[in-house]
Image (cartoon, helix red, strand yellow):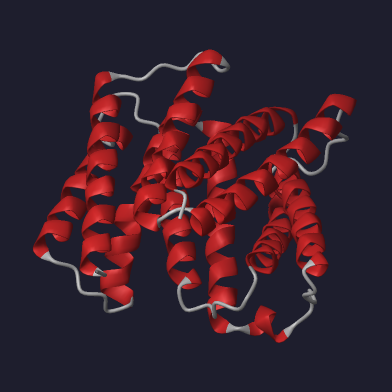
Length: 286
């Protein structure tokens, strides 16, 4: 195991994801959300499908009809549709902060739906972490934007996707799973397109930016896979939080966003409890 390389790969993946989010913000400012979902979904489905094909896997296979895969695709649709709509309506920094609750929600879901034993320390971390999410969302504050609940829906969708991935047989290749998920998102984009502004002809610049965003997504998936293969999970996984650093930097430098004190406190609580939960889960599994 080479933990330093693993940490480097994971950091690269988080940078690529943050840059993809930036591309999506630009895309949703120029094109209807449904169209953005369709184009990104279609591009991802094709590229990951080609990747799977290069590994010798057929796109049309019984894997597509496996219940965990279908549930995973549904969760991916919930997560991505909510995420992209949120990007078009709320600050990138707020959205990025809320989705950092993912490890806590995965632990909560594993206890409720998969029968995983969770000790009182992790339960306490979940409760405190969810309090941190409330500090970020600030539902009772003046000027509260209800669109922020889209970020919460995205976080729930991501957690359900991660939970649904666990029962998927290990011999099912990651590129194939990713291709199916992107295809589902593309179909969802078509479904919401009539209600989100229809179709707008992309400018030449946007026609280059969107494929660039899809390629960044592929880089992120490849880097995560590499990180998990060369480094120890317990060491590599906490580096996922570097995405928050990159997202905040992009939000402040590119989009001129700012963070209030309550949001910063909430983020600190969510990250701290998330890291604690990951550490306790690692210990529980020996």
